[in-house]
Image (cartoon, rainbow, N blue to C red; front, side, top):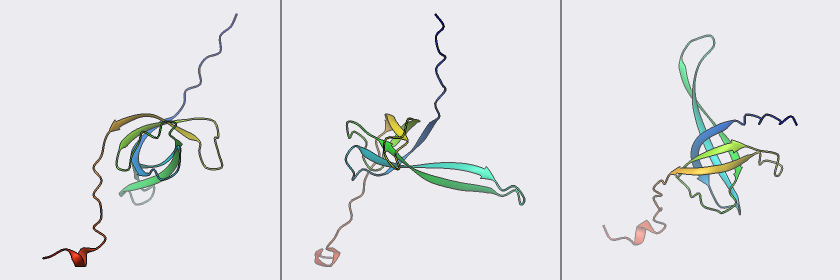
Length: 100
Protein backbone atom coordinates (compact mmCIF):
# COMPACT_ATOMS: atom_id res chain seq x y z
CA UNK A 1 0.00 0.00 0.00
CA UNK A 2 1.17 3.48 -0.82
CA UNK A 3 0.81 6.05 1.94
CA UNK A 4 -0.06 9.59 1.03
CA UNK A 5 2.53 12.17 2.03
CA UNK A 6 1.25 14.73 4.51
CA UNK A 7 0.69 18.11 2.97
CA UNK A 8 2.88 20.76 4.56
CA UNK A 9 0.51 23.27 6.17
CA UNK A 10 1.50 26.89 6.68
CA UNK A 11 2.11 28.03 10.24
CA UNK A 12 2.01 31.61 11.49
CA UNK A 13 2.70 33.30 14.80
CA UNK A 14 0.85 36.39 15.99
CA UNK A 15 -0.90 38.30 18.75
CA UNK A 16 -4.58 37.83 19.66
CA UNK A 17 -6.57 41.02 19.03
CA UNK A 18 -10.04 39.76 19.95
CA UNK A 19 -11.59 36.74 21.65
CA UNK A 20 -15.17 38.02 21.92
CA UNK A 21 -16.63 35.44 19.54
CA UNK A 22 -17.37 31.88 20.63
CA UNK A 23 -14.57 29.50 19.54
CA UNK A 24 -13.04 32.18 17.29
CA UNK A 25 -10.05 34.47 17.79
CA UNK A 26 -8.67 37.28 15.65
CA UNK A 27 -4.89 37.10 15.29
CA UNK A 28 -2.62 39.88 13.97
CA UNK A 29 0.45 38.55 12.16
CA UNK A 30 3.28 41.03 11.58
CA UNK A 31 5.92 40.69 8.90
CA UNK A 32 8.80 42.80 7.60
CA UNK A 33 9.35 43.28 3.89
CA UNK A 34 11.44 45.51 1.69
CA UNK A 35 9.75 47.91 -0.73
CA UNK A 36 10.41 46.67 -4.29
CA UNK A 37 11.41 50.08 -5.69
CA UNK A 38 12.60 52.26 -2.82
CA UNK A 39 14.18 49.56 -0.67
CA UNK A 40 12.75 50.81 2.62
CA UNK A 41 11.95 48.11 5.17
CA UNK A 42 8.23 48.16 5.97
CA UNK A 43 6.28 46.57 8.80
CA UNK A 44 3.10 45.01 7.44
CA UNK A 45 0.38 43.25 9.38
CA UNK A 46 -2.66 41.16 8.53
CA UNK A 47 -5.58 39.84 10.56
CA UNK A 48 -6.54 36.16 10.50
CA UNK A 49 -9.65 34.55 11.98
CA UNK A 50 -8.72 31.29 13.72
CA UNK A 51 -10.73 28.49 15.31
CA UNK A 52 -10.14 28.12 19.07
CA UNK A 53 -12.07 25.00 20.15
CA UNK A 54 -11.45 25.33 23.92
CA UNK A 55 -11.56 29.16 24.10
CA UNK A 56 -8.10 29.11 25.70
CA UNK A 57 -6.52 32.15 23.97
CA UNK A 58 -7.10 35.60 25.46
CA UNK A 59 -6.42 39.12 24.18
CA UNK A 60 -2.70 39.89 24.14
CA UNK A 61 -1.53 36.26 23.98
CA UNK A 62 1.11 35.23 21.45
CA UNK A 63 -0.26 32.20 19.58
CA UNK A 64 0.68 29.79 16.81
CA UNK A 65 -1.97 29.11 14.15
CA UNK A 66 -2.01 26.59 11.31
CA UNK A 67 -3.81 26.51 7.99
CA UNK A 68 -6.94 24.35 7.88
CA UNK A 69 -9.99 23.70 5.75
CA UNK A 70 -12.60 26.47 5.53
CA UNK A 71 -14.63 26.42 8.76
CA UNK A 72 -16.82 29.45 8.02
CA UNK A 73 -16.91 32.45 5.71
CA UNK A 74 -13.74 33.94 7.23
CA UNK A 75 -12.10 31.15 9.28
CA UNK A 76 -9.36 29.23 7.47
CA UNK A 77 -6.91 28.82 10.38
CA UNK A 78 -6.86 26.83 13.63
CA UNK A 79 -5.12 27.49 16.92
CA UNK A 80 -2.18 25.14 17.59
CA UNK A 81 -0.91 26.46 20.93
CA UNK A 82 -0.59 29.52 23.10
CA UNK A 83 3.10 30.47 23.17
CA UNK A 84 2.99 33.28 25.75
CA UNK A 85 0.29 34.92 27.83
CA UNK A 86 0.04 38.70 27.46
CA UNK A 87 -1.03 41.43 29.83
CA UNK A 88 -4.32 43.22 29.29
CA UNK A 89 -4.60 46.74 30.66
CA UNK A 90 -8.20 47.51 31.54
CA UNK A 91 -9.48 50.99 30.74
CA UNK A 92 -10.89 53.04 33.59
CA UNK A 93 -14.34 54.02 32.37
CA UNK A 94 -15.12 56.70 34.92
CA UNK A 95 -11.84 58.61 35.18
CA UNK A 96 -13.69 61.73 36.37
CA UNK A 97 -14.77 59.95 39.57
CA UNK A 98 -11.21 58.96 40.49
CA UNK A 99 -9.80 61.53 42.95
CA UNK A 100 -6.58 63.15 41.75
